[in-house]
Length: 252
Image (tube, rainbow, N blue to C red):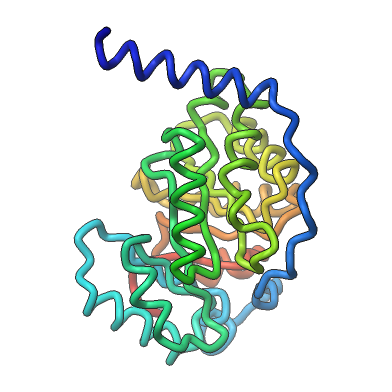
């Protein structure tokens, strides 16, 4: 049997099992260590922006010394979090970070990996000391109208975080998708028990749409953070919209 056909059969089998599986009720999750949510009218400089700044260094070849430096900067400046590749979480978790969260992203690229893979990555990230794990919503499933499977995918991938106090961040990769699809992802994140939803322009490389961010925040029942497509000039405007976090690869 050809390998591609074998992989297809395994994937179809897993999706069918998840559709028919009665997922047990989620145990109560410990209150996550979430910083105070940004308030409208936040100042352009000073403590206000630093408290919601997510220093995001997801470079594939990021050396450990640079990751350590990023963590040190985040702690010293009082950033909300530092977001690093999952393979660097364990050594950085050994560094006292105070109130600064150590976060990572699993299921790359675009959340298209199998649920079991994202489950395993989430479990390892939390065991290694991550205080927040961003799990991408499978936008390919949403594009094909398979909303229930997308919700099961996110909910099951997040299971290792239950009872740990680690944030589950539903990552929504934006770009050329219709606006309503982003709101479908919001509904999935809310029903799957996520603690936060993060809008991302990382893969698209496009500037973050500040007007859309404001509309999304108004409709969201979850705290909303934003990553990618950000310039220094746009940080204050996004913070003023009520975003709980703003991720960028430069220092603030």
